[in-house]
Image (cartoon, helix red, strand yellow):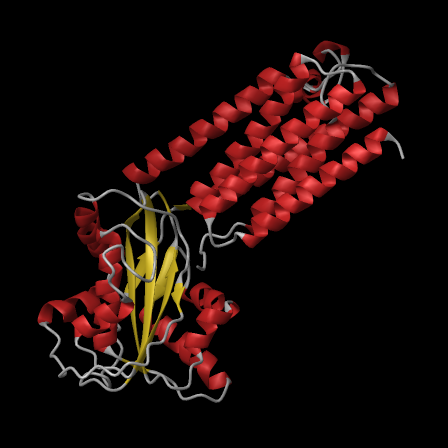
Length: 82
Length: 325
């Protein structure tokens, strides 16, 4: 199995776990926010590890993953708190 | 126009082979724009609640008929609306706003039974369901019935009386619509009184609660809570006559009806989901074009971003305004 396949399987596990726990915390919006932030941070770490393993980790890539995570969090805040 | 669209959405020489919408500066703009949007919604809501607000239509008569419909569908006797229990519910709701908590027991140690007794209802068995931030009466009933513990209260055969309070106020710094449902059996002098049908706009309630609330800190969001614990203790207390003030309370808190021109949950969801859909679409187009042209560039993986945003899209569809504890 190729490395990229393993990486994407890991990502799928992270995301499915995130959705599952998020669903389980339906009655606690604060907990949902924590789960969303944790999933976003995990995704950023996953992205950095993936690029590091592929040997093309660049500061621009790190910033991109951080911004993607921030977009997701701000959208989560939009839905949860307004 | 065509050039602009291509520059913004499709990888091309003009955008260094990465859709401009996916450049780092564009992404930073999205974060800032959504932050401004969120603050803007809050400010406009605070200044013009009739224009931008939370559409709500919850009434005691609908809650009563909805609750009894559920009981009767199971062959149980309908519950009788009880003014004294409604007064207890109103006291409980007021206490939650005053002391800024969202729980069955107050930080001062008051239980639901404290309020039931304070209102003058003598019970042999009693229970409480709580809900917050639902938009409609049916939404509250559906949520309670979907929760086993809340459902147990609604379909408990030993209950005879029921009371409600629907109150709008500020909890944890958030505008909150509380629904308190109290059950009981054991008798009360006012047990056979008819439901309060008076529709009072929530304005009066909001003002009253907010005044008290402003002296305290803050508290939370918009959901539904419940209390399952039906005490079985017999309270040997003489039946107290509800005071006129308590009667006024139960009448004031018989409904919350708000019809703003723009409903905040609708507009925020539409904007957020439209944006996420658009972003996923741009990532897909960008990925396909780059893959076909075999362009090598230093960026994150589009497939990862697509999976990540899709997961958030799914998660956000789960979010509901009303919540059960």
